[in-house]
Length: 138
Image (cartoon, rainbow, N blue to C red; front, side, top):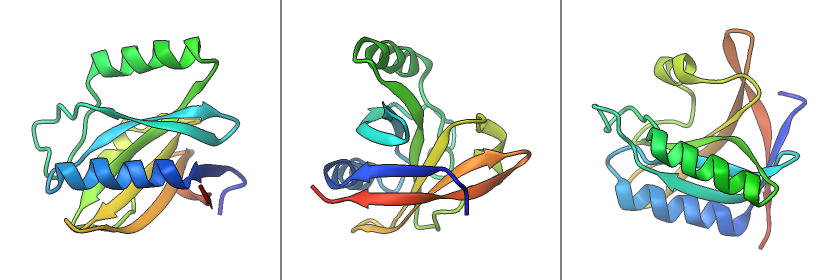
């Protein structure tokens, strides 16, 4: 386990479930805004990947919009969340290629009805390590 932790409030976990299920069977993606490892808000971004069934790519304009909004609110972008439709919540090779050091990568496995697994990862060196995910009640 990583010494880092990501805290996710129940309302944001519920939002992730709604957004992810609404886009199933394609991957949904977005950014996590917050500070000190505490997510304040999950935001949806457009997935502009050519193969949305098993890839995500955050739209550049969405990234810039939310980066500016986070700064106005005194928050940071903590990382990226995305779904793995009908798969596990482990990072793929493509996830690794796109990852930025210092960010958290929250992955939700969805099966069309619910989130079946939720895990968070952080890049260390050239591989991911799982970080502690603290689910905070509402």
